[in-house]
Length: 207
Image (cartoon, rainbow, N blue to C red; front, top):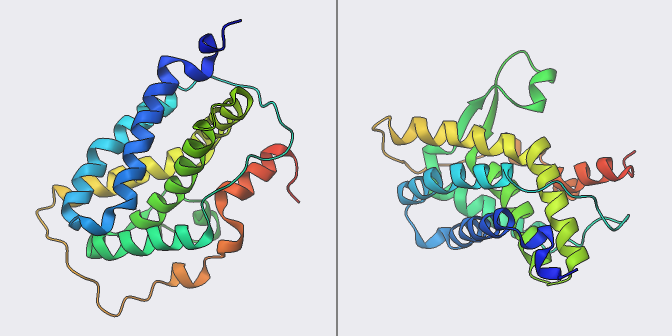
């Protein structure tokens, strides 16, 4: 069978690759943009990325071991910190769709920057795996990306869209957060990021 007819080369996958690449490009160069400009860019990219991710074909993984990871802890922190500074007072919002709600009595404080850093982690790893050109590796990259979209970062994406929409049309201006100490940052355990943890669970390697 001609490898070009493999589902990893289907139109839906190619279009998802294109939008994921745009998301990563703007995220990596966030320091060059103003916060309000970046929010408007995300307002346009995130719905498209959600749509394209929902159309990814269903795959079965070739390999039993987890996919190779490229995004480091320092990469994640750099993305989160840069976006958090750019978004300022627009970053934090009350979230009603969060795992922590089961442990609290109401909405929890979430941040657009952290959601974007989580999504970036998965998008960048996906793109680097897809660009290998090896069918089996590309297949598993698509499989994992769809799995994580359905169960984890898809919800983070739509949560962020709601917060971004509210701020853009509120008429408010972004203000820098002075003496910003985020309790969520202090409590975050970056040694076990949610994507890696969930992959272990799906592979059956979780505790």
